[in-house]
Image (tube, rainbow, N blue to C red):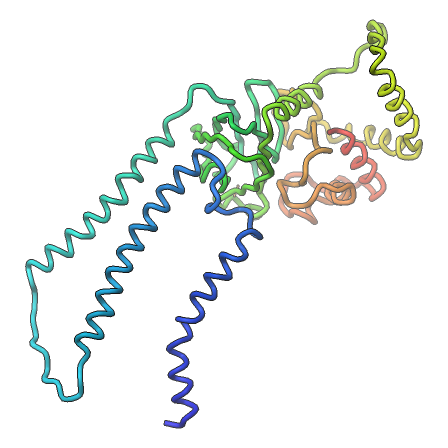
Amino acid sequence: MALWTRVACRFRRWVPAVLIPLATAACIGTSAQYPQSTLHPQSDFTRLLDGVLMHTVWAAFVVFVLVEGALLWIIIRYRGKPDDPEPRQVHGNTVLEIIWTAIPALLLAIISVPTVKVIFQTYDLPKDAVNIEVIGHQWWWEFRYPDYGVRTANELHVPVGKMVLLKMKTADVLHSFWSPEFAGKRDLFPQRTNTLWFTADTTGYFPGQCAEFCGTQHGRMAFEIKSTSPEEFEAYINGLKATGVKPAADTATPPPAPASGELTRVSTLAAAASQVDPAEQAAVDSGARIFRMCSSCHSLDATATGNFIGPNLANIGSRRYLAARTILNTEANLASWIYDPQAIKHGVIMQRLGLTHEQATMVAKYLRTHR
Ligand code: CUA
C-alpha cells in the first residue's frame, strides 16, 4: 500500500471523532441565532416538557457511559493476538438473556413513569385562566379573546405570570400549533377542540409555527407570541376594544375641558396634528375609500363577530409582521402584499385586485394608521 493511501486510511478513522464534537460545538454556539428552540423553556408548561427531556437525556447518558465503558474495557482487555487459539464457541445463556431483557424494561419504566405523569398534568385544565380561542386557517392564525370580546390575527399577546388557556380548532384542514418556548405542539382538528395552557415567565416576542403539513404555504404559516406585563396586556386589549367604538355623532356632548395640567400636552398634540402632511392625509383618505372593496373579507373592528374570510386587521399598523410572519410589516411590504399577494405567498385566498402600485400604497398608508 502506498504511503499516502495508508496515511489517508489512518486519518479517515479520526474524521468522525473530530467532526462530531466540532458540529456539536457549532450547533451550541449558534443556538441564539435560532430563536425557535425547544431547549429554552419560558413557561411552566415547557419546563415540564424540558424536565422529561432532561430526565431521558441523563438516563441515556448513564447507559451510554456504562455500555461504551464496558465495550472499551472488553476490547482492550481481551484483544486478540496473532497466535491466540480460536475462542470457545458458546450459544445461548439463560442468565445473560434474562439480564439484558430486564435492564431495558427497567430503563423504559424509568423513562415512562415521569413521561406519563407529565402527559396527564398537561391535560389537567386550569380553572382560572385567560381564555384564548385559536383557529387555524390556510395559512394564518386567528386569535379570539372571548373574555374580552375581541379578536386578532397572527400576533398573540399574553400577560406574563398569568395562565392562558388555548382552545384550538381549524377552519379548514389539519394544522398544528407549535410555540417551542411556551407550549410545545398540539394539533388542530375540524370537529373537536384541543387545548393547551401555559404561563409565560418572560416578556418578549417569541415565534411559533404551524407544525402539520397543511398545503403549499404550510412553511409560511407562522405566528408570534408577545408576552407583556399585565398592564401592557390590559392596554393592548383596551386598544383592540376601542377599534369597535364608532365615532360619536355630531350631536353628542362635547368632551369635557382638559384639566390645567393637561393643557400643555393637548396643545402639543394639536400642533402635531396640524403638521400632518396634506398630501399624506389625502393618500390615507383615498386608501380608506379603496379599502371599502376589502371590507367584506377583512374587518378593522376587533370586536366584529362576523365570519370574515380574511384576518382581522384592527391593529395591523402595530403588528411586526405581515402574511402570517412571512414579511416584515413596512409600508412598502404592505403595499406589495396588497398589490399582488400571490407573488409573495402563492395560493392564498386573496387574489390580485387590479390595483395600481399607487393605489396599493394608499391602502397600505390607510391600514398603517390602524394601530
Ligand atoms: Cu397550517 Cu401547516
